[in-house]
Length: 122
Length: 107
Image (cartoon, rainbow over all chains, first blue to last red; front, top):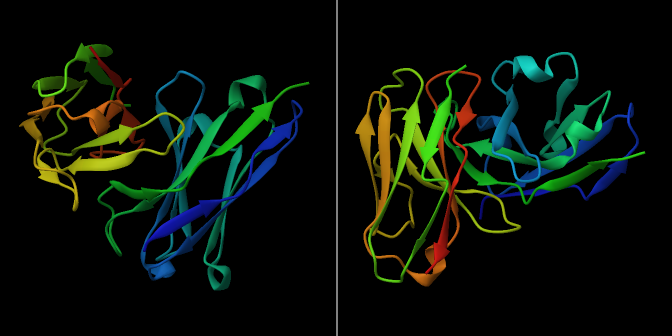
């Protein structure tokens, strides 16, 4: 079945960077975009960024522009999201989520990874 | 950015009852509205896309309606496994945005 498996929880100090992986299986990896969404404690889901495999392009929320980097290892069917200059406000669960439409942009997400908790604390 | 507002933020209901959750967008988003269910400690799950289309495998007691700026999610007969938090999401324009969530609790 289609599945996204993310890397484990991380604890980082303010100012550091974190890199989260998202390994896909059960479908043709190159045919679907991967989006990144985060959820701070008690907060709503927040869309961060989007990797477009057709042209290798990436789109970012203005809020994260300059701090987020998305990369892809196609042979390993794995996407990565790196967030830099961490502050306590970046403490959240980070999700990768697959665009439902192959070679398209419906902007509906199915499935999601299990989530990766990132804790930023001095 | 398109702001998404859900109401109520929480509700209590009994098994078998019908509930409705509202979602309002700050601008017209046509029918580009999705609904997700999230249980504690789990990732969101897509329930409904394009306002009213049920994702494969989702029970028919779930339905969605609306257009423009106002949308609703209805559960016709609440089941024990439906107690969760529900989020709407606009898929009209980037940045994609979500509502604040509606927590459905057992009465």
